[in-house]
Length: 190
Image (cartoon, rainbow, N blue to C red; front, side):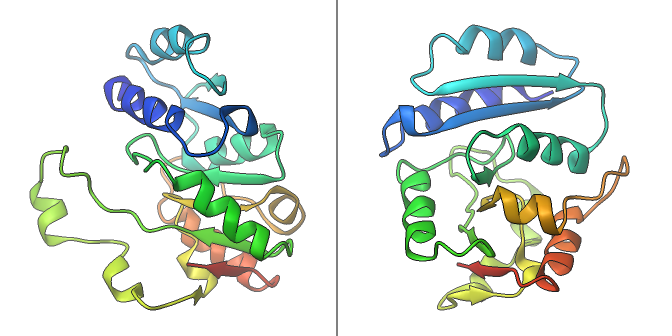
C-alpha cells in the first residue's frame, strides 16, 4: 500500500552499475489494496531488468520474504523493503563481496540510511532500531544482524538451513532467522 514509494524504489533499481540483464527484481505484494498492481504491471515492460510481480492476500513479511526467496532464479538473493532506495552501486557492492566470499554460509549486510528526500519523523529522529552507527569499523557480524532491509544471502543456504517464520503480525522475524542461521554457520559480512 505504498505504490508511490515502490515506484521510486523500482526506478532506483533500474539505475544500477551492473548490467540490467544480470539481475531480476521480484515484487512480492502482501495484499496491497491501492494501485500497486497497476503500477508494477505498467513498469514490467519499461524496466531494463526482468521485473516479476507476485501477489497474495496479506500473510505477513515472513511469508512474503520466503516466497521471494523460493521464486528467485539466482542463488544470491537480496532482500530490501519497498521503502529502501538503492544507491547506484548497491548490487555491485553486494555481488563483489559474494565474489570475495563464495562460501554458501556467507550473507552480506549493507548499511541503510534514511534518505534526505523523505520527511523526518519523530520516530526516525529519536529511534534507530538497527543502530548502524555502532557497526562502523566492523567487518563480520553475528547472525542477529540479519536485517531484512539490505541483506543478501545464498538461496541454497537459506533453503537448507532455515527460512523466515510466517505468523501474521510477527516482528523481528529477520533477527530471529539470523539467530537460527547463526547456529548453522551463517557469517554476515558488513
